[in-house]
Image 1 (tube, rainbow, N blue to C red):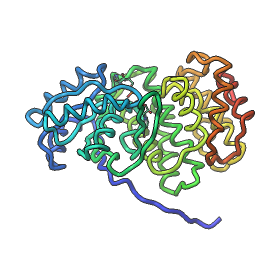
Image 2: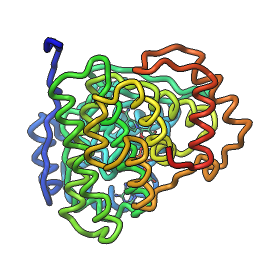
Image 3: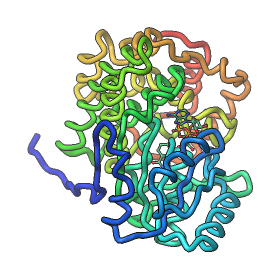
Image 4: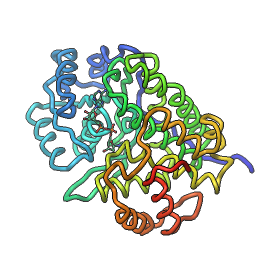
Length: 351
Ligand code: NAD
């Protein structure tokens, strides 16, 4: 097959290194700003206040109301705080939920964003914003949404509990696995996806036994950057659609849902495109789905959808919704194959 592709590098500026979050004030100045509002969830309010203190006179305050799924009413409240404090940029400290709030503010006001990620979700390097209003989740994409500067500092991630670290890592790995067979994949996205999977294969087992190992945490963040970048540059398929359906309809937790589904969706698609998923089998050993499942089990990640409170009746509904709006996938899907896939994931069986 002759080589043919489109490639556009992300314009985001990436700053990576132990302790680099100390430089956030200088990054605020470098992007031409003087008044930063620090964003966080209520759970990370203390860390956000400490960061604001470190930023000093360039920080105008902390808004700690970020929550999962970026509800529009929270964004509107935060924008009022931006206006009242005359903030000219936001600094998002946290996981995908906090990054989502910063993106939602930027989407409406075009203020520049600096993101300091503390999970492996990868939202900080994508131009995608998912938000909810009246119980409905919608997704928008655009240049204004992509954060300008991302500061990856592993020393800020040692507090991420081990369980969340594992599910967050598997969530990131799912971006890479789907990037390998994406219709619009290119040589760079494939290199990044494989390297991202290798990074997590190495980092996650070390983090389970030594959560304070900053080198292992840095390897995890490196994987998060690579996997997030491919999520932002190539299209996703079956895996992301199913997780979106489960999260949107049954409110299942984001990272756990991805973690449980990954071995099953990868095994399903490996039947159609074994050559594209060969690196997954090489990195995790054995078959594509079996290797990913064994890895997830070995790091203590959740394996069964039923443990998230789903019932078998929910699977009927989910399989119906998952095939309602057709989308591209390397292997054709129909309701009964999706139902069987969900059953396997519900029971937590090795694919
Ligand atoms: P999250 O941001 O909701 O974080 C989960 C919890 O962990 C929060 O309470 C948070 O405060 C806490 N936490 C985060 N880092 C911590 C740390 N280092 N120490 C202690 N506690 C910490 O979870 P997430 O999985 O990172 O993000 C999920 C959200 O991100 C979902 O809404 C998802 O849709 C979105 N997302 C969006 C994209 C995108 O490209 N738009 C990509 C991935 C995820």
